[in-house]
Structure formats: C-alpha cells, structure tokens
Image (cartoon, rainbow, N blue to C red; front, side):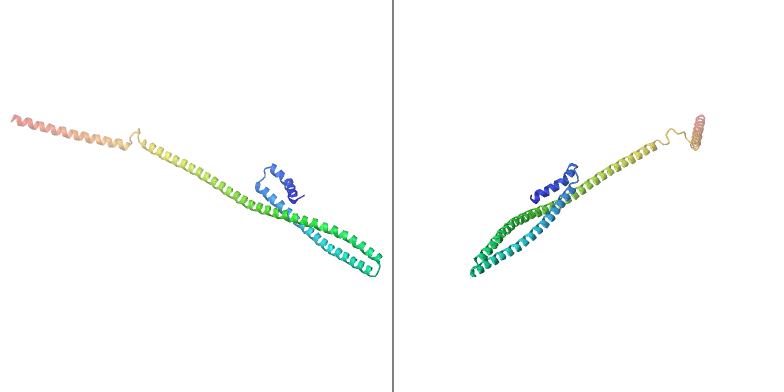
Length: 232
C-alpha cells in the first residue's frame, strides 16, 4: 500500500466527523497538514530503517562473495594437491554460498525498488505538504481579510445608525424650538391688562377730557368776541 492511500485512510478517518459537523475550514486544513506531517515523519523513519537494512544486506553480500571466492581457492588448492574429493566438497560449499548470494542480491534489488518508490512518494508528499502550507497561509490571510471587512462593515453600519439617531435628535430639537417660538407668539394674548395699565389708561382719558374742554372754552370765547364786534 502506498503512503498516499494510507495517508488518505488516516485523514478520512479523522476528518469525516468534522466534515459532517461543518467545522471551521481552518481547523480542517490544520488537521490535514498535521496528518501529512506525521505521515511524512513516519515514512522517513521507515525509509531510514530500510536504508539501514540495505546497508546490512550489502555488507552480507560482500561477505558471502568473499566466502565463495575463498571456497573456490580451496577447491583449486585441493585439485593441485590431487585431492579431488576435497575439491568437490569445496565446490559444494561454494555453490551453497552462491545460492545465498542470489537470495541477497534479489533482496537488495527489491529493497532498492522499495526505496525508490518511497523517495518518489516522499517527494510528492513533501510537494503536497508545501502546497497545503501555502494554501493554509492564503486561507488564513483571506480569513483575516474577511473578518476585517466584516468589522469595517459593522462599524460603518453602526456609524450610519448613530448618524440617523443624531439626525432624529436634531429634528426633535428643531421641532422643540419651533414649538417654543409658536408658544411665545401667543404669550400676552387674551390677558386682562394689569392695574398699572388701567390707571395709565384712565390718566390718558383725563388728559383728553381736559384738552377737549380747553378747546371748547377757546371756541366759546372766540364766538363771543365775534358777536361783540358785530354789535358794535
């Protein structure tokens, strides 16, 4: 099983509930990135163990190859000493070792293939992780931008509301002023004059009477004078 399919199983098992509950997308992104990071660490640790096993197998291969060469030298020595029986025995040991060499070489080939696959998948996972981190930063920036815009919108709406209330208050004050002016215009109407005004009115009437009597007296005197001149 590749690390991507395994990682998908891990992520799905952990975020399905969050998807069902419509959790915060930022939390989901953080979870995905965390799972990717954990998987990457685990796979790298596994790769390190495989590489260590390959090194041990390589050392074992070198060792058994030396043993095979040693048995061949022994077989040659036995032939030189006319000990064909010993030479056969040495060649049998060499053949057994060569079979082990074939097993170790096949193991190394499989290990190399596995390491290459791990390297490719780790590189892909690292690339995906880098993309996810970049997208996470972009998402966070978008989230902050949206929050800032919402805050500004709310503030603008609040200021508009405050302005509306201020205008209402202004109109109320204007209406109060107009009503006060209207009431002031009615002040003094249909109110009986006070005592001083009555007395002053009487004094004016008296003065008029005096002036009228003076005029009458002057006119009478003038009439009498005219009559006397006519008699003369």
